[in-house]
Image (cartoon, rainbow, N blue to C red; front, top):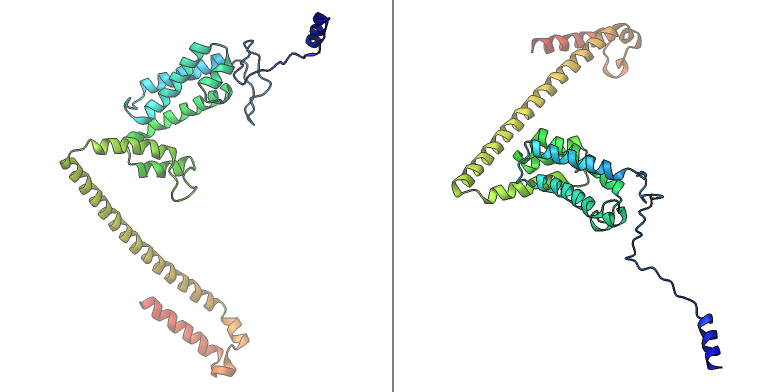
Length: 259
């Protein structure tokens, strides 16, 4: 009787099936979606990601970008993360995304790698590591339309260059710092002189444009002599006839030309 009750109790108890959050399927299925709008599933993500990583690494090593700069280390960190992740996880994109790619899909990391290739080419062409952060900020605003979010916004390029700039600045001696301050002072003096010269040139251009406008205006007035004669403008107020007005216009025109 006791055994029968135990059997009935076991039959009525349902098995509790749970899957933990850390469970990762080992069949490596192809994704149904990446979960990101505009990023489609890439079945051949592994060879393409390896090719992009190898191309980025080859370009960085053959470029003029110094290995000690911040940007070089940032780009090489992406390369090392891709290579190390694929070496450890192989085709297991689930573990790769979770452990190495901050949860981002491998397809998105592929896009990031190609985009980083374009950035590295710009970095090598424009030699940002030799520029002042403010100049880099200007380049970023004009070229990539970044940095217009507000006055206090720092572009990513500017942040990277500023790290190298500050590091170089800390390594300078007192004599080099004095020379740098002198160069900054001279640069400000040159910019101030250029600003004043530009301001004077603008003023001269405005005066010239004003003179040209007056000439055109006076010439147009002479074309309408017949209209002035017909309309008799202002006669009842000033007592002047149209001939008087035309004579005044011609006289003012002659005086203006003499000046």
